[in-house]
Length: 230
Image 1 (cartoon, rainbow, N blue to C red):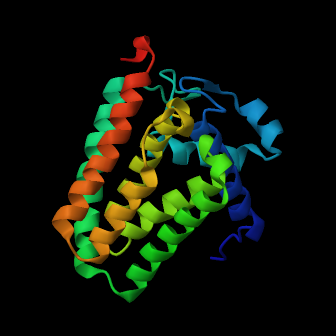
Image 2: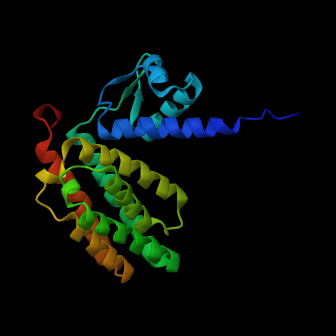
Image 3: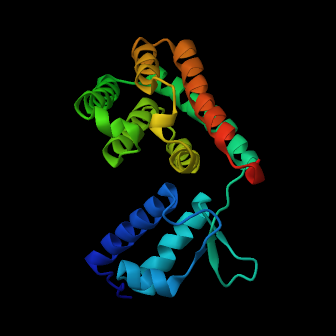
């Protein structure tokens, strides 16, 4: 039986739609609890219903979107202090496992990836001091690459998928409730300390610093969450 060929551009449309929708949810452009109106999104994104529904289904599986109780609609997942605590607990647990294994199995390529991403983060801060007052997508990109590089040699692809999802769930809180100018914190030094310990193969120290890094972000977010979300 001849197989139906899928147009080459279909995957690109899906990927682009998914990336755009995820970004708007993470940044709060589409806020927590907001209904996703497919007719409006289809026009805004200039796509057909098929890639849009596929993108929404992916975000449902990641926990960023919920299906309405009547099974006929979708909404952005709400936020709460309890949810943030759960996400933080899971992220610390799984990311530490991945970091331990990466330190154990990491080769020269892993070390190069960690050093490169750390270098770009440091360079961005020094070249763009004014932009560090607000969340900037260039910094966000390298920040994610840094965390991904640290755990990338764990040799557990399913674990990496879970870590990636938890990063997004955690990141939405940080992007929506914290701005750099309001945070008396040297994030760059925290990153450097984690990277140094990991590259020195000091798993105990690196994992402790990673846990503290993740927990501190959650603590600062909880402090500024609106009363009704606590």
